[in-house]
Length: 157
Picture 1 (cartoon, rainbow, N blue to C red):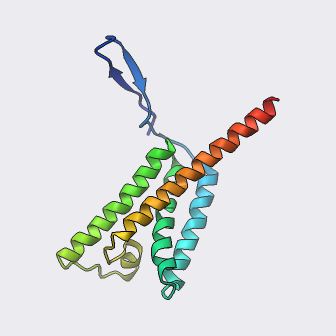
Picture 2: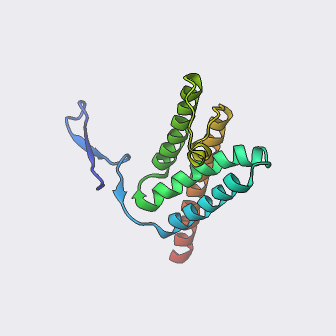
């Protein structure tokens, strides 16, 4: 998907300016892919071996799941970190809402793997975990930008 600027007109000035804050474009990011693969392996470990690990599997797994979605998207799409984190968070909330609706209408997922991946029990604490995951990836993005600016400044001296 190519970045498409959106023209926004201002009635007070009669002019228009380009707004590209929601623009995305396809690209490949090796670092994001490596983070995505690493997080995927940790999530598989939690899903297969973490049955008795209590909150580590449940809460931490949900935090890592949002981070995994963020890095997976980031490996394929160039966009603002806030947009990618929002998409990852909203995907988690949508899955939680689907779990709630499925429980309300007594719908069960028969496939064991799909039930483990999507979850079967709605828990609103999961939304907190999704938010924490989104905040963590945004903090990582801000830290990366800060380090990059420091490197550029030090190199310019």
